[in-house]
Amino acid sequence: MILNPVAQKFVLHWGEMGSKWGVNRTVAQIHALLYFAGKPMPADEITDTLGVARSNVSNSLKELQNWNLIQVVHIMGDRRDHFITSSDVWQLFKTVVQERKEREFDPTIVLLRECLASSDLDKEDKQAQLRIQEALGFMESLSNWGEQMLKLEPSCLLKMMTLGGKIKDMLNLLR
Image (cartoon, helix red, strand yellow):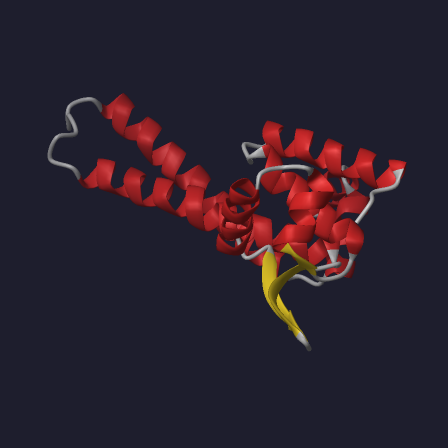
């Protein structure tokens, strides 16, 4: 597949953004290519299109599958695995948020709970206990809020995002 200038710009930029978000550049570029193409692609075509090593593509595809961002599909008459991603940006967003929650938030909440319950915690250091409790409360609240947001329909999420700071004004009216 030969990428037109817009597709090249999109894929390259997505790779740069991925790097800033802590995602391997090739992983992000492959995801961008699959999203932009909007059709299933075999690994060899991805390799040729992006001009990266086949082993890099293979590892990146595994990473994207581990994040539930791509799926393997099969094409009649073609024995190769083809890869596709959702064309729904909201679904992709929800998948990334859910995966990050499971990989980052949930283990942090477990660790903070363990810290509070640990016999190694200096029970006399009330300030340390308070800081851990505050961090735990914050993480739990944010995690619960995230779970609630993930259950909302995209149209509702969009309305909430559009409201922005107006939500604060509405809450002030309720006082």
